[in-house]
Image (cartoon, rainbow, N blue to C red; front, side, top):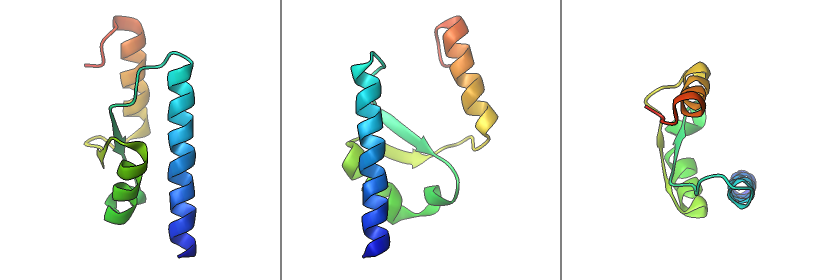
Length: 81
């Protein structure tokens, strides 16, 4: 129960952060791709999906540099892919 409470709190804080981003002009959250050990935990991804209100799925790319490159491309060319 303790760990469940900790994970739920983390997901709620994550949701608050996404809401703050949106309030500052970022696009509305549509889905979340996740990597690392937590991505393999069905209970954790289900909890995050429920709290965030969007699909949470394992990322097909797990290298951190890939995400940074996608964001850079978006900034330069105006498209993700």
